[in-house]
Amino acid sequence: MTGAGVATSILAVMALLLGAGSVALAQATGDTASAGQAAAVSTTGEQTYREICQACHMANAEGGQGAGVVPALAANAHLADRQFVLDRVTHGKGGMPAFAEMLSAEQTAGVIGYVRTHFGNSYTDAVTPADVKRVTAAMGGD
Image 1 (tube, rainbow, N blue to C red):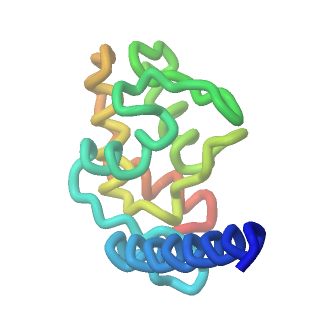
Image 2: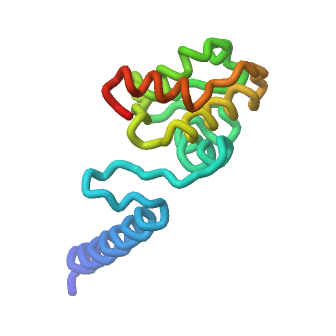
């Protein structure tokens, strides 16, 4: 086999392995819907943050730069406005995806509460599942 043939074979095996890993990950996280929407299974705000949000906002919520700019959530004055956070998480904006159809009202309220009371933030006026349901109902959801 030539060098190019070996490289092609290696790439083919890697693609198969990555594909199998993606299926296993999707099954483990509950994302088996044909629409490809995540069916998040986290139960606490911290768990939702760790499983979803920290992939972009980083474990310490300091955001970052790469293919785009991800804003820091740590010590973020915008988080004082509960409606701003609620709208951003449910509707998304720019590179931020909308999570209204991916998270339950309880998960959304939980992760908002977690971020607003951690990472140097101390905004304790809670966003409730009822608040989330009000916003998603206005969007045509729930």
